[in-house]
Length: 287
Image (cartoon, rainbow, N blue to C red; front, side):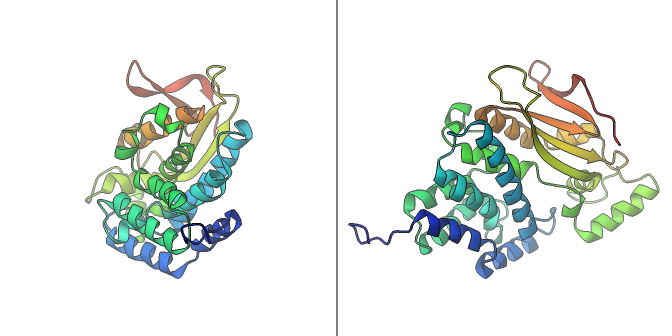
């Protein structure tokens, strides 16, 4: 026991608790309930949480390989995986304010597991700030002091493909595609369904060779295979502009640039023209 009679928990116990939370019935139920009340949107079920967790772990490893001192052990082994898995847990309480609701759930859950308040607060802060509107209010300078948030946000914004479209709408889009009508918005939130359905393959990776200056460790690249019969690249870049802006700010705070590669064409953001433009001299032919 600590001096104030508060139970202590070791780093090893916290790591074990984070691993266990990914199959905790209590949290799985919350994700199931949250996905049900989000039925008008793309899937936000536990499979999405697993994908974000896996992507965040990959990005963390790539960042640490280049900047070994950027993350402390607690951030790397506890805050990032817990924040990534719990980021959408609040949808069961409020879809519109799931970040705020998720913060409360994360704090309560981790406190009940014996996590120190300071560590639980770091995880809760990741959950609270993962939405683009909130994340973009944070300056790059402040993000440099909270790299675990940037890593989780980039992972969250870069996860999404046709598997996130709900079955009924996916079937309808398949039919519309065969008759050349898949670009039409047939229902509420159709643009999000169409763009996700158009993404046939999604991969996040770090390209060390794509470094515009010596200050950059390379590019964090979102590589997409896009069916442009359903949604053109221009619509993808426009619809998810704020998500990609978040990725760009997060990447900058980590010492990288952010790129989007669509069907072999790599795009970078041009500040002067306020638009995503093809990166000159870069074009990878599709297999």
